[in-house]
Length: 350
Image 1 (cartoon, rainbow, N blue to C red):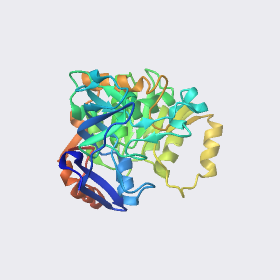
Image 2: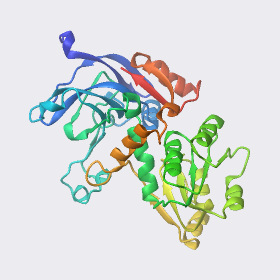
Image 3: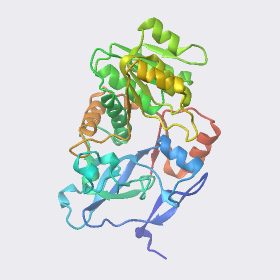
Image 4: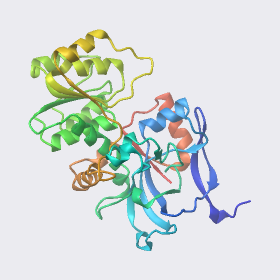
């Protein structure tokens, strides 16, 4: 049996719907890598999907939204990193392929990813390359540090849509990325911000974050409301990953406006020819967005998000609705699956 000091507690995805809190071998950092003690890790929607639907790699320790402190360094890593506080940058691009050479790291043909392709942060410790550390400002706590990654995703989506101050925008979906997007839009000077969602609690939160008009599509038609208010938004962000919101995003955008697709659509979804006609007739700029990286790696989105969280321009406290010890992870995911509670961000504390 492995000595106790070589073991750690972790939440391991063992199969569809089966995430288990157990003891596993504690990793030792390899050349160029560090060992981080995880102080706070947040549940991403992709983690929920992997637990409920399974994943290509199992067993696996999930988790990629996290912050902690460096407790061990591998060969070739400066010992001055010991004790430093940092957030996890989860993408590990190869830095050799044609796309990496252009700074298109999320298109890397040989990337790895913490919490998806290698063990992640739902654990007491996580091993990662030293270059995948984003050092935290002194005034930013670990929980806010765990929200840097989703904050970067929202900012990157706005940039893919070419957002400019004074424009109008709509966030279709007020989950964690949508609520981050609303805050970025307010910070960056949006003239009018629409948001839609089926969850009235999240709509209320969006209003408090700066949304001017918050719509529940069960009670009001967002297409008619946007037409009435503006005639069409400059930028529509599809964040829910639903065919209905994809159609609405195209319908509510003004001619030569921008639509950014962020949500993962169902694989069997059908794209109606009528929507294609709207894209062509209105000459829309339609962009996809995948993760949150730019050159030089990991991109300005990361320090910008850390600074916005530190200053309070992004409200971490209101984003976090639940905190649980990692030991309760099985019950937490059961509650998510049963929809027994509503949440924005859930922090797990190892």
